[in-house]
Amino acid sequence: MNIVSKDVNYAVEITGNGDPLVLLHGFTGNRDTWKFLIPLLSDRYTMIMVDIIGHGMSASPADHRRYEMKRVAEDIKYILDVLHFPKAHILGYSMGGRLGLGFACLYPEYVDTLILESASPGLLTEGEREIRRGNDRKLAERILVNGVEAFVDQWENIPLFESQKRLSAKTRSAIREQRKANVPAGLYNSLLGMGTGSQASYWGDLKNLDFPVLLVTGELDPKFCEIADSMKKKLKQAEWKIINDAGHAIHVEDGEKFGKIISEFLKRNRRRN
Image (cartoon, rainbow, N blue to C red; front, top):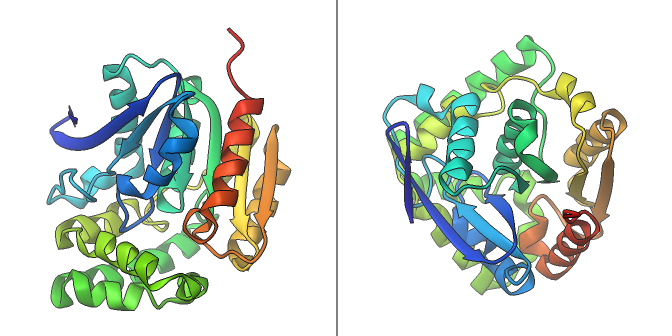
């Protein structure tokens, strides 16, 4: 279905029955990222899979300011309001995890639980953010100059995704096609408006979150393991799972184990009506 939030059309796929679960994909992904979880979760949860602004079948506005974290978090709130869900479980991967955390910090009353796969609360200092914004702008400009396919050639070979080279040719091809399906303007503006350097730091908000949080990282992704370790120390109700022999995208590299961990966490933290 399509839901229009403040002039932006969002493509949203809804399936299943039960407590709502919002699923937010990573940069260059789309809602199809999560379809492997449907057989596992849809009998107990209403799965709300969203194409984030600038991705998939959702709109790609020309103004990068429309992609700012606060504005997109407000869009997620609006989607839940339209669907008449006052609270939901939130699951986000990487960029989607940053968005999920931003949503949880801005609208904690909407959150039952929060699941963050390879996600960050942002950068601590303005100096770090300024450097990152500069790097993201250079990356974004290459998308406009060289096109999405050339960008994907570069993106899939960055060290963060090194462990994905062990995946089957079929899986790698599916990921590549998903990335290539995005439009240049959407990816460009996502980097400028919602990149790690552009978002606010939510490190100081972690201590205020009063709901269960699950952090999931891959053993082969030391940067995000370090981030998760620091996050866990600040959160009131946090679990942290490190997945052996997996990198940044655990749901792709070990979907069976990822699904089991998610399912068990949600089961432990189901609403008591």
